[in-house]
Amino acid sequence: MMRPFRLLSTLATVGALLATAAGTPAHATISGTSATNTATTVTYRFSYTGTPQFLRVYVDTDRSTATGYAQAGTGADYLLENGFQAEAPLETSAKYTHTYTGSGGVTYTPSADNFANPERGLYHHTGDCDKADFSQATLQSYRSTQGISLVMCVFYLAEYKNGPIAQAALDQLQQQLDTVRAAGLKLILRFAYTTSTAGDDASKDRVLAHLDQLAPYLNAGKDVIAVVQAGLIGAWGEWYYTQNFGNAGTISSTDWANRKAVTDKLLSVVPSTRMIQLRTPKFKRTMYSTTPVQPGAAYNGSALSRIGHHNDCFLASPDDFGTYENPSVEYPYLQAETTYVAMGGETCAANPPRSECPTATSELAQFHWSYLNTDYEPNVLNSWTAGGCLATVTKNLGYRFRLTSGSYPAAASPGGSLPISFTVHNDGYATPFNPRNLELVLRNTATGTNYKLPLTSDPRRWTAGTSTTVQQTLTVPTNLPAGSYTLLLNLPDPLLSTRPEYSIRLANQGTWDAATGMNSLLHTLTVS
Image (cartoon, rainbow, N blue to C red; front, side, top):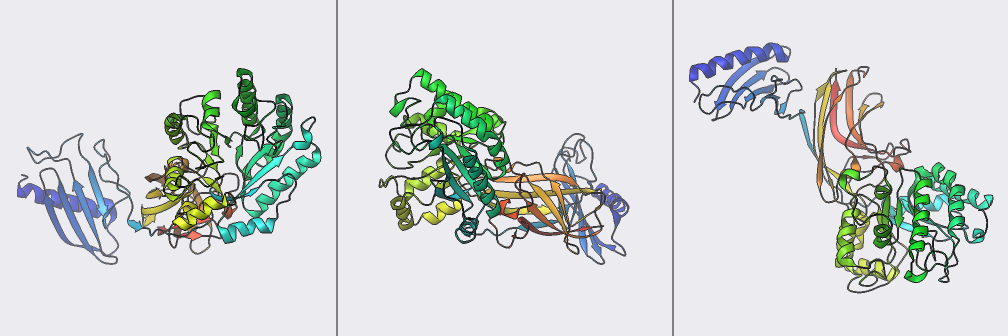
């Protein structure tokens, strides 16, 4: 154990150091000192009087249990003020191994409300998007009264199986994209040639030529395209009944090559920041790889990272009407895949008990569903209402982020450090699948001016069912005016950052700022 005279001598020395180096508050005096020790740690406490009153604590955690003296190269030393570590630690050597920052802790209250968030949730289906004009007012009512931010657009090209797409049809597509943008929603987009089980679709070469025509419109509308379903082949674009690509499950090697040519072409004309989706796991496993997307390859722009899945007969039979060929292999594959690629679809037939709540909620979570048709199939959806799970499904489709706690400094200086830490939990079935920015916003309480500081964490990796702690030391802008600042968290769409409808709302009480699409962190920072 350390000798008493050495402990008190050190206490006096550290007291002098803190009073000079750390900066005693104006007119404050040290009203009391104390020290305690364990086998490995010495804690020095200095109480100050004045306005405000506060406590400084110096913690030395690198004592030798044999001698009681500090050791080089081990442990860590901390300076804390009012229970939180000061911004400028006393110990800056290699021994400094931990950081506990901030002088204000916040605990957040979860919200159980259902509300719209971009690129997730229930969607309304439009099966004749090539002919029926979207109504901006109707789309806006989906969002405001139903919490729906997605619409499905199946755009048929039936008239053009033997020639180029007419300009009028291309103009119609552009108009639909513009209306969706004006309304603040996004599209799930699919192209197809027929609704007939005769499968009278277009040839491979015609499809490829049409995709060249569609390319500039897809690029211009990428900001409001959530995802593109592969479509194009067969009845409803579901790749089964087809006259040109291997009909009713009888698919030759040439047919597979032609299907892959269409898929590759679609990937090339859909902007690289957007995913496409295939109708069954077998399609991707046959044409690309049987290995699921790995964490290190997720979101890297490769074909594997951009091909997701959709299931349009969810729960309708043991194999979901042919969605699965070998569930014992495809279930674990799809579970791993959809951690990083988009998954969605619709129900198509009641099939109790499989189509009822227990299996529905289990598999929606297992396969990381982001969206589901609210218009079909009504018997299945009604059974979910009766079973008490539809409200939960509605809230948990896609991501559902909520803050649990945060720690932020009380004060900072222009050009100085700004260490922040917050923890967010994802209660949803999935994560965002498109790029998403993350910003700390400093809002001047007097002027309302926002100053945005980018954060490096990627919300696409805030995994479903887990908590993620974001810790980052930012630099306060050198030209930031002195004053009081409210801290906010912003998760804007990179392409629509000025539109609050496209920013992510957190599932907390008292944090959402609808006017700006930002989330208050319930903390105020003084800059001087």
